[in-house]
Length: 77
Image 1 (cartoon, one colour):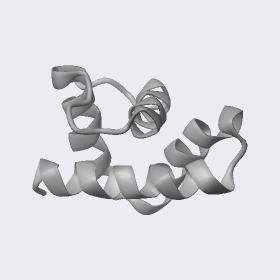
Image 2 (cartoon, one colour):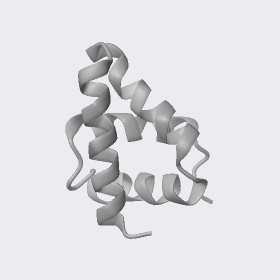
Image 3 (cartoon, helix red, strand yellow):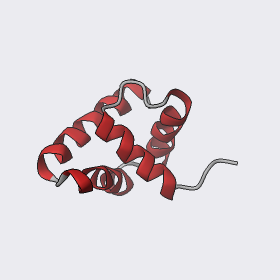
């Protein structure tokens, strides 16, 4: 999938949780949403993007959510 589209989607998800979740919980809510609704290939791509670029194009909340997601996902060999 196109990384620009994944970045856009992650930013939209994080914008939702920024307004709906307490600040301390929002990043974990983003991570949980990605675990539940994104297929593994999409999760691997966005995690790889954060690892390779530091999260270029992602909002701060989206990047923190993806980092939380990455800490629970197995690293590629």
